[in-house]
Image (cartoon, rainbow, N blue to C red; front, side, top):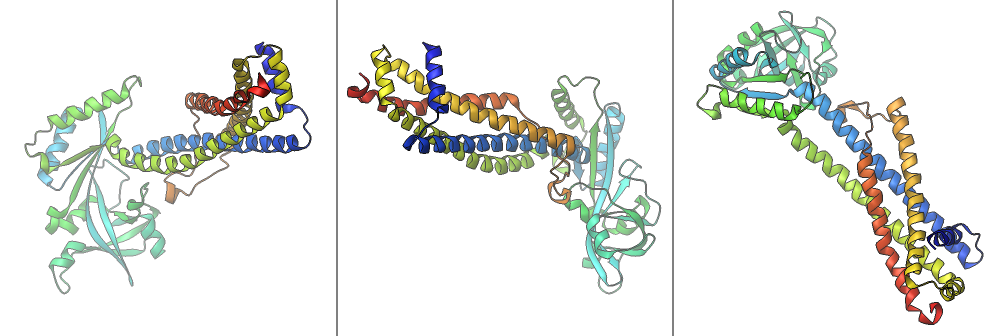
Length: 400
């Protein structure tokens, strides 16, 4: 009996229709196309979401480090550096920087910058004395050639002193730009440690000290998140400083939460719109099934006389809905897999790195979620099949 019902469902769907049924059939096929496109869009969107989030996290982690500790106190900074070097050198590598606001001056051009310097030759790139590396925004604005001269003014001295009593240092411009990932880094400039102390020696209380901790890669990735979490907690607990307010520590995972939430909100909003079209298309398919059932009154009456109960009529309607939803889903899934392969193989879609942090994007497809989505979609189809079934079985004079 089930085999017979399946054959009837396929005949109702693919049989050539005339008159009103031809219109129903055309509407029916358009609904399949719309549903296929909606499913394709939601799968591709989810793949872009997973791929983008993963790529951004990977790139930012290289820049931001696994753990960052900041303080405005030089004594606190030195204690922390000494502590982590003495007790945790086998577990991590670190980069120490200091930074302070300054003004870059070149001929008639003035530009507010964040002046940074590496300490202990531990980070970024080694600087030649009296040379400066500019962030991309500054580098592109002044269009200087290699070894052109610029001046850095201590911004705090401009507020405290009048006239010409300013702290000023002269530098030669390096040919390369300061390597950076985040937009706020494009206004940074990098100088050597000796010139930094000379420039800001009278305002060291306004200098921000930063220690970036990079965990060494484990031999095994098993329980790696737990290991890092425990290491992070133990490190902070063991720092021999009584005043916890004298420094600020944040792990990469904590830092990434806010950005991750923003990404989730953007993609969720778009997904809601696509889900609306999916529900609308499913409802349209159900209405088409309804019209098919209504147009086949004589055939269903004949089947009823042959022993078809209301249960079999409901199963027939389910076959119709399930077949249509499945065809739409398979079409959407196959096309999404094709786009996934093309993007990951040929990188046909690129995004501007200045805006989205990354330029090359690899898509990641979550097949478990897709399977769940397929089941949910069929559940919606089953629920909607109840309405044409109730309509069919209510006409006792036709079907009984």
